[in-house]
Length: 93
Image 1 (cartoon, rainbow, N blue to C red):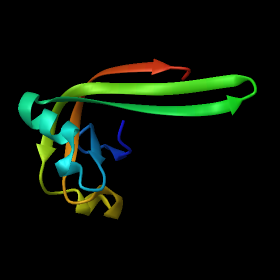
Image 2: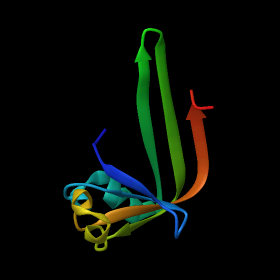
Image 3: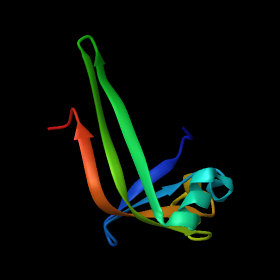
Image 4: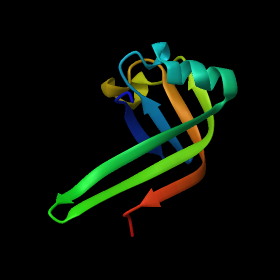
């Protein structure tokens, strides 16, 4: 598990994933090799009662060596762009 930055890109209907030196990560290399990626976003709404929730987003992906900086400084230079094909959710109405 590696912390990342992410945002929904409404113009393309994609999830853009970035972070500090994302282009040096195994995830980036895996996307270059097989063209697919997933991201899980989880949250704990409450401890009492225990109320977790999460989204898992999967799809075809691109490993882009540039373009991240235009999305904000938290993205770094490179980014992974996921074209959403499947969404699994838990605890979200």
